[in-house]
Length: 258
Ligand SMILES: Nc1ncnc2c1ncn2[C@@H]1O[C@H](COP(=O)(O)OP(=O)(O)OP(=O)(O)O)[C@@H](O)[C@H]1O
Image (cartoon, rainbow, N blue to C red; front, side):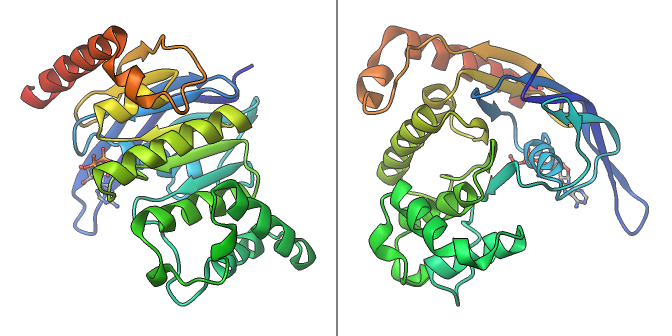
């Protein structure tokens, strides 16, 4: 049984004037437990929409989604979400931000302290619990975003371009941390990105979407051995990585030109 099964999911937005936008035209994907999927596609092809539907933040127009065979129709504690702009509340410390998320999920207050400590420890920020987001760099804020998602101990992590706002060096550092986390924790992960290199280095499979209305165009298996954490540089220089990069580049250029 798949950890996550997405069958023929469609989404049509209708604005106040009745104009319709067909964002997704039948998205189909089966994800295995512990698998790392990255999603690439041209701008506006529906990547964020698909992730928001999976999180339960957006309704779908058609299709089915099930987790471990159980149909889902809204948010749930088995799914954690990481946003591009971190989504931290600026008037709360890191610890309070995580506590806020735990409260929203109904986790009893007596357990917050321990969960906050463990999740900040996981991302190397145990000493920053009482810091406010403005006192931290973008990379640190996104680590807190990841810690907050991990705090509810979800089976599935959904990340929408989480490193898109970071400088190149910080981005590579966080990619490595993501590899290390995923290889240790074996979460099932769907990760949207615009970066071909990021898509390859992280993934077991790269999903390439067509231009809007979005559907899956190709799925590329990334046959690069794990663990990959700490080996980013040598992987990027390898012949296989360069081949995948060329293949994905050609596929995306085709979509861009279409
Ligand atoms: N609430 C909304 N109302 C109307 N149209 C919407 C809404 N949200 C998204 N859309 C449209 O749906 C399409 C898909 O948007 P979405 O943000 O999912 O694409 P994306 O692939 O994530 O884009 P990008 O790569 O630029 O972030 C776009 O044409 C967008 O304008």
